[in-house]
Length: 425
Ligand code: BJ8
Image 1 (cartoon, rainbow, N blue to C red):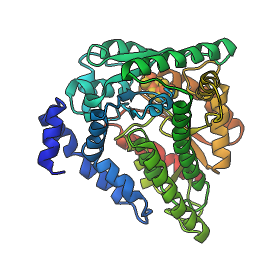
Image 2: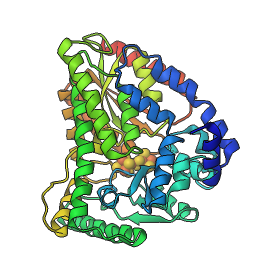
Image 3: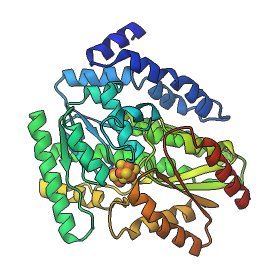
Image 4: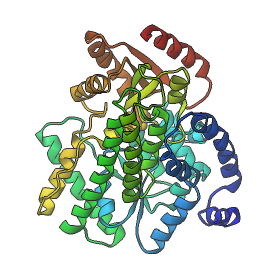
């Protein structure tokens, strides 16, 4: 498609073209600096680079074509939303969390300033009308995870229909029962809005599609256990971010192709950093597109990030939904179980998350952990203490950082990260 055709498409989506131009203007340079400047990138990254470049173009065109065929387009903000129900009816699911400072001031027009930047950014994308996905969705699915999110859905609902799932805060039997009921309720909502019935066969397909994508991401992460590591943390972060936008089968196939290339590198002992380079696990809050700040600082300082315990990391793909359920009751129960196993800091108690981080540090042979929280994210900030204590007891150095999407603290972050890496050396 030509640029003119894209502009027409954006106009038809009701976007603010002037603001959109301003937003996109900075991205090519950022992309060159962060990604293309790396040496020895795997060839398989070409697909993902192109997907990023076409995120507001070709991919949106595809989604609009699906919409014309009567398939619903649904926006989500959290890895607790079971996309299997959307995939079951061939709908399009897009993750809409905001990762850009550009839209934070707009978000602050309707939200308190002392709120997490992820929420302000996503709100700003809607208010500024610069996200074609936000413009294309038929409805949104929010959740009652943190207070900031759940109250924001009430405001967002004034702009786009926003359905809210109630997430329990504990993981006992009554909580599982509540969550299972919520998944049934979401199934009905998806059916009502799409005019399609989700039967066992369709749901089984939806489950297989999401499982295949999770499996591919797990294989990708596995490759990062190697030393030298065959792919940078920045590239894996980009792939994980794009998982929320792409068509799941195609995405899984491309990740698997990339994994074959990486496994070849591992067999030859080839990597993107020298053998013995400092290996870091990052744990904390999600990093939606186009947030690459932390990874860029760490890897520019000569270390490699080998795993992310985040929702743009392991929390997205950990565990599978059991396949083979013959009735809807069995299938929805299996869905409820897999999703309630995700260890987000919004749960109490949440010792599973501490275990997850320790396992990652051990199995990915990390020299240290960076515990990272977005500003004003209380649950993750509060959990830092427990995680730090557990890591220190096992002799694993940890650096705790809080940041936002702006560039203002880059100098300070660099100083602290470089000192941490120096200490690990
Ligand atoms: S499962 S991490 S995607 S809730 S960073 S908005 S928690 S104040 S994004 Fe999250 Fe689901 Fe949990 Fe993951 Fe609130 Fe914290 Fe902001 Fe957060």
